[in-house]
Length: 255
Image (cartoon, rainbow, N blue to C red; front, side, top):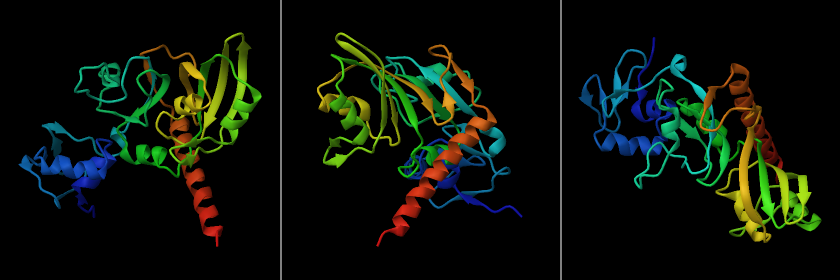
């Protein structure tokens, strides 16, 4: 027999928001169960009770989950709404057939691959600090790059008193006053590549994310999206679980 589930959990699993944010949404009176305004502590029976947020029915169950790969252009912010009136990625997936939310971020001046979903569990798994899913970037820097700078990127740079995780870096192209790098990160600190380059005296002229785990941007046009394959979804989730498991294993081995 199915059991009722706390509303905070239902909202988070739908991809709407985090559990902490869900409490704020419920307290604001924006959530209703079967037409009745909900309160903190309320529960609902998935598949039977009708849960709405701001009058829109909440997506429930794996059959309602969708996973998208978007080619985010420069100039768009990674939010579903912006109080300053800036262009946001919500405009690019408005016809996706469901309300989806970004998995992680790309800053306004960056472009490339961005995942979106309404599966909160998947989003949390892929973005959790212990889930070091590899993210690949093509980065154009000025005025060029030295072996010493490459070495520091690969071994780690101190930002805000904490060393960045080791990264993979290789030179794709080097010419007078300009270099194109491929950088693979295994952590998701805010504006990490730009801040690392700034610390090394490098100017980032262009930053494009080309892959997240097994999901590749490929020839997807700017501003367009596609659905992830079942294998891609499973690959991202499996990679995140392996990373988290390795991290827990290392922590458990310390004395």
